[in-house]
Every structure is written in C-alpha cells, then in structure tokens.
Amino acid sequence: MGAIVNLNQFRKNRAKAEKKAAAAANRVKHGRNKAEREKNKLETDLHTKDHEDKLLD
Image (cartoon, rainbow, N blue to C red; front, side, top):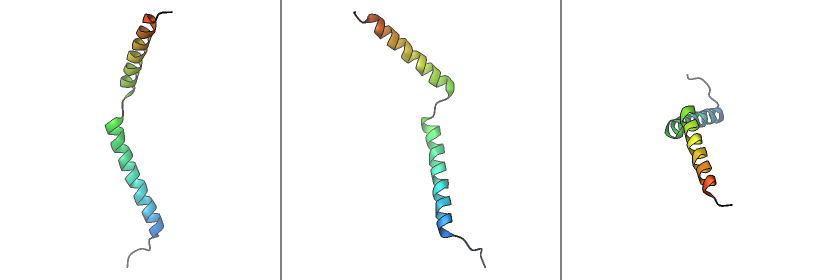
C-alpha cells in the first residue's frame, strides 16, 4: 500500500517546482551578467552626457 499523501500539499509543491523551472528559464533568456549591465550603463551615461552637452541654454 502506498504512503498517504496530502493532495493540497502535493499541488502546492508541484506549482512551486513549476514556478522555479519557469524562473530558471527566464533567467537564462533575459538575464545579463554584471559586466553586461555595467557596459550598458556606461554607454547610456555617455549618450546622455553627449546629448546634454549639445543642448542650448
């Protein structure tokens, strides 16, 4: 005979595992490492500074 299983707990654990799998897939798909984030920030700062320098007072 099998072990007694609380179905509500089973459903919650299964949903949690599915969310973890989806989160891992999203990290791979959309994630960036620290070097990429810093490079993007530097590029944005340079473009912003260049744009602000060209503005007339």
